[in-house]
Amino acid sequence: MLILYGGKRSPFVRRVAIWLGLQGREFERRPVELFGAEFESFRARNPLSRVPVLSTPDGDLIETAAIIDYLETAGTPNRQLLPPPGHQRVVCLQIIALANGVAEKGVAYAYETERRPPEKVWADWVTRLASQIGQGLAALEAETPDAGWFGGDQPDGADAAVVAAIDFLFTVSGLLDPAIIPHLVALSARSRAIAAFDTTRPDA
Ligand SMILES: N[C@@H](CCC(=O)N[C@@H](CS)C(=O)NCC(=O)O)C(=O)O
Image 1: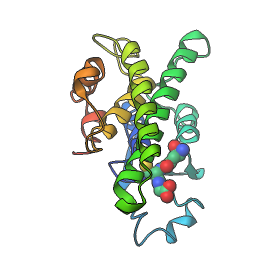
Image 2: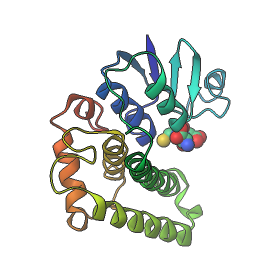
Image 3: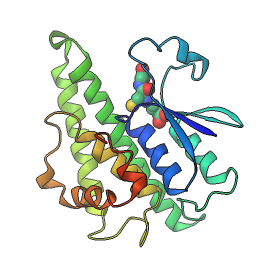
């Protein structure tokens, strides 16, 4: 049995959870108190004490991209969520890279504004992060299909990464203006019709 460690809010953990669900793989979820009791003990699974970690017959795997590579290649998945080598795969991986970058900046923004004592928040850094997130979102918005999925008639890895990033950003107070990213908001709404997305929402 695959075990996915990490809470529902993390966009990286969620990308893996969506991926597992879209591939029809059975797995168990285990939240981790990384900012509490489990910070030290979790080093046994990831020396960096970070999530996601996917516990597999091949060991405890760390780092989203490496976990995704495992899921695309290990065993006999019902389907692969990355196109075969060629132009479509390059395009898909670039969307994933952009979504992942936005998610990384969003996590940095959340740490800065939610975890730091208010008197230690670096305002210029927060402004820079918001600008990077805004630029990344604008680029993603321009690429998002009017209907359907990045993957065409069914969601692929790009949809998993983009929805995970957007839904995470919505959990960060005051960061997103839905009015300027209508296609991304609609994609996130459409995703709720699919269990792999719906059951893994940060607010589910
Ligand atoms: N590049 C890593 C990022 C993982 C990451 O930053 N995870 C966050 C949760 S969203 C975490 O574990 N943070 C705790 C920490 O870094 O101390 C990946 O994609 O696996």
